[in-house]
Each structure stands twice: as structure tokens, then as C-alpha cells.
Image (cartoon, rainbow over the protein chains, first blue to last red):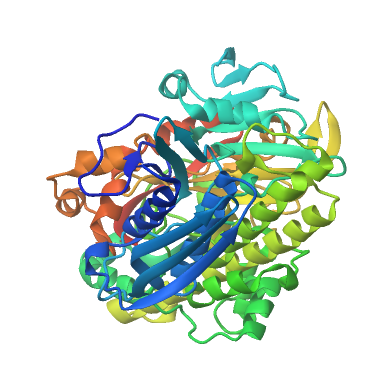
Length: 145
Length: 478
């Protein structure tokens, strides 16, 4: 994957994947990594600047390893958008070794109010990684679009 | 990755390491040069590690980097001893293409193209955030839809018997089990029946601009300058969620069966395991949803044509030519080393291509082979092909599915910066209506290979042959 410079102000950088959308997320802590991943997903789906934060949802995920935790967390959020029609702009994460809880703040998605960037079909396991490198946490995620 | 040239059109990845069979890629020299350092070749090798795989791990000339399987990948596994891999079908179960013909000529439609494009854009819901073609579907109705597929559309006045006969598998895959679809998947899919979706999905009004085989074109009801409608979409949220549900299950179950694979996205379980059977029941149900989805969009398109152009059903003469799926796993019989073998063929971005005489081909088309529909990009052209007899031995009865991407979505957006793609396409005679500007940029013509090159490879390899070429007049993007 060839890397592009980070886009200003975004919690992620988009990587060049031929058919789908790949992102790299870097954060100082594990909790922040998951938080940024959640914000990245919202930003890939919708132009988030128009999203209000007057409603909230909670998400709770348990998994044996961080890769599964990331996969299941983002899949849960994708389901929140695709089935419940909820889009978010703020995320608060609390974590332990094998669990993650998140409070997601946003509002119901409306086609005439929010700009839909794309639909995302799924969070793939292909090259999915979550790792600590020196003092940073990094994750690489490829979404099927 | 070591590549050995087997013929002008065929390249082989030798069997090494955990590979159970060699890999084979149908491509010309230029295509191979473009992908020589691409991850898609490792993906061909990874697929070759699936337990029970027979013959070769195959790739068509529209091969590009996917997730797990390469896009354009075909893998046949022994129906008794092999495994089923949800990632080998993909999130968009039964993503596919259908082509309908009209009784209208290009000049008539071209003169009214803006009005028609508006009507189609308004009539066909994009997807998320919009209401589906049939609002308020009950869960009982949804269960019937996934069980009956396009037959449900016939019973409810959205399709004709002719349509069913001209749909792969009659628009209904047997073995569909509505109880294997999760509540979540039903919820995600309910408002999306009869919607297009984003990404590379589209509805295109085209004109026949070249005929390569007059006899077959005639049998398909195609002639020069005739207007046709091409629809590319899949099983929408219902299929996406089904893939996700079963991937999770199968990733966990895989260890119990002692299956080790180089990519978790390839996760697979034996076909004859409870998890494998459950997935196959759910996959067939999602495939049926997709056929019903494309059928409903065709119905909406017919209405839009009549309203926008003021033509009667008789003048419009809207009829399905054929509907193919290009993300699916199916049980079929093929010839391997001269012997007939029952296999489960995974096609991930590949189209079934049965030759003349195959009983699965509608009787009126049987002497000519199964129609294979290959969309190109939105600026150039698409192709109608038919399967050739040798396809069963060479590619498990499979051909390419599209042009194949050349540029990443990011690179395409960068390339489009500062350009007015809508105006550029208009200059080329193509009217565009799209939900998102970035969607047009990501799908710009230059992001794709020239589909002509792809179909030429399949023809030279003796798998499919060209019947007609279609030029876009209007493209609707979700």
C-alpha cells in the first residue's frame, strides 16, 4: 500500500487500495485508536460537519484479541448507520483488555440534510491490524465499498 | 511472485508452500505488466490454499486487488470434500448485472435524454436514507422474498415469466433458508429493496453501437442503434450483513476444523459442516433478495421510460435479455482432467459463462450459449458476450465481470480535482445523474482498464465471444 500524507484535521489517512477503501489510523493510546477509527468510519460515510450531537447510542463489544475487537466494533457502528440510520460525530471510548464500551453521539441520518459520501458494505479482515509500535498505536482497516 | 507464461493469454503461478493447486491468470502481456507487483497475485496464491480446491485458483483478466479473494477470482472446490468461504463470495452476495432491451431507437431517446435521466434518477431510490421501492415491507414478506427471489416479483406484478426464464437460476437459488438470515440483516435490507446503492453500482441507458455476431444478436433481440438498459446492483444491506454475520461465525469455527489460511478474510469451513450448510442457506436467501432487487429496479425503470417519454408499454417493448450474478458460490458439474466432477464454484467478480447446449441456458438461446454481460466504465462501452463450449474445461464455466479497476479510489479523486467530470462526460455524449460528486470522481472512466481489452482476452482464450457493444447515453449512480 502506498501512503499518502495525512489529510488535515482527519483522524485517519486514506491508503491506496485498488477497489476498496483502506485507512491507517495512528493514536497515542489504545482507547484513542478505537475512538479515531469510529470517527474515520463516520467521515468515510458522510460529510460529518453537518452532523449534530443531540442523541447518543452505546456500543459494547467483547473479543479475545484487538483485531477482532476493532472488526466487531466498526461492524457494530456500520450496522448503527446502515440499519438504524444513525450517524455520529463524537465518540467516547472506555476499554479493558478484552472489552470496549463506547458512547456515540450524533443524530438520525437524513438524505436531504447530510451529504452521503458512500455506502460501506463491510469491515474486512483483509490485512486488518491493531498494534503498538514504540509509543504509538496503529491500525490498518480495509472497508468494502 | 513467480509467473510462468503458458500461452499468449494464460499465466501460471506455480504451486508452492501451502498452495494445493497452481494459480492461473487469463491476461495479455499489458495486463500482466500492470499487476506484476500487485497484491492481487498473492491473493490468487492464497485462494489456492483452500482445502478441497480442484484444478487451479483462477483469475480473469479484470483481476484486481480485493479482500481475501482477488476480484476476478474463481475457485472450484470438491462438492463433498471442499470448503465454503463467505469471503469468496463477498459482502455483496449476488451482485450482478441485468440487461433489458427496448423497442426504442437511439435518436428518439437521445433527443429526450435529460428528461429521461431525471425520471430514472427520481424513480430509482439510491439506498441509505431513502425509502425502498416497496415501503413498509413486513418481516413475513421479506422472508417470502428471500425464499422465492424473482418469482415473488412475478407473483406481485413486478415481473413476467419471460423475465424469470432469462435470469440465471430462474432468479431463485434453491436451498434458500429464510431462518438463516439474521434479524439485523432483515432490518438493514428492508428499506433497500429496489435500490441501487453506491460505489460501482449504476443504471445505464445505452445504445447498441456495434454488432459482432448478427445471428446471436438477433436471437437476443438486439440490433444496431437500439436502446437498452443495463442495471448493476446486488443484495444491498441484507447481503452485506449476511456476509458479516457468517464471516464472524466462520472465523471462530475454522479452528475446530483444523483449517489454516493465510488471510482471515478467506475464512472457510467444510461445505458439509453445520456452519457451512447454514451459510449456504443464508447465501442463497441473500442471492434471491438480489434478484428481486434488480427485478424491481427494472420495473421502476420501465415506468420512468413510459412517464418521461410518453410511450406505451407496446412501444417501449421492455424485455429482459438476461441477468447474471458475479459474486456467488454455486454447485455445478464441470470437466476436470477429462472427467465430470461436481464442484462448488466460488465466483468473486466473475460471471458464469455456459456454452451452447447447456440445459441451464434458456431454450431460445441454448444453441448460442449463455449471455454474459460485461459493463465497462461510464464513459466508454459495455459488452454482451456468450459463453463458449470450452469454458467448462478452462474456467469452470466462468468469464470476466467488468473492466477491472486500474486506479485506486483515492488516485481517481486526486486526478479529478479541478475537473468538471459531468461536463466532460456530457461532451462524450453521456448524461450523468449521481447522489455524490466524489462518487463520480471515484468511478471516472480513466480509473478503469479498457473493458475491450478484457473481453478480447476471454475471446482469444476461447471462453466467451463478443455479440454486441453498448455505448452509454445516460448513467444513474446511487
